[in-house]
Length: 183
Image (tube, rainbow, N blue to C red; front, side, top):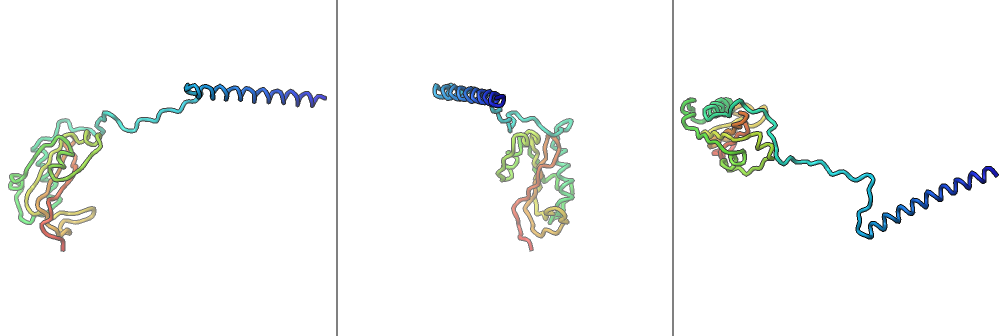
């Protein structure tokens, strides 16, 4: 008889738990029918914000912005190691023929070179204002990792270098249109 009593108590306990669960479900169903939101004990968290609304620069700026003369000097040094010129020019003649322009951002600088680009706001903030230095004249350019000067047989009409005024970093090199096809 002891087992029967314990089984009966266990059956009553299980019945009570099921009855309470049915009441809870009925309460939730009534709330839903009445337009009230159900009670959640563990609400779903909001997803984290993926994009920043007001980006801050992620690079370290120069103590002072790159000047026109400094941008021209950087471009001349890079040009010396990047291209070979069809007509040899002295550094002074090359500097005198250069066009140096400061643009508000990378997109505006690219537009001046005939490029259509878009950059994430944090990339634009990192670059700040952009110097574009364009050297006219026919050039042959090294094209890619491990390529040595003179391996590219195409000739281009001029070359432009872009530098960040804020950091002094090279942002890009763009040649003019090809004048001759490669051999």
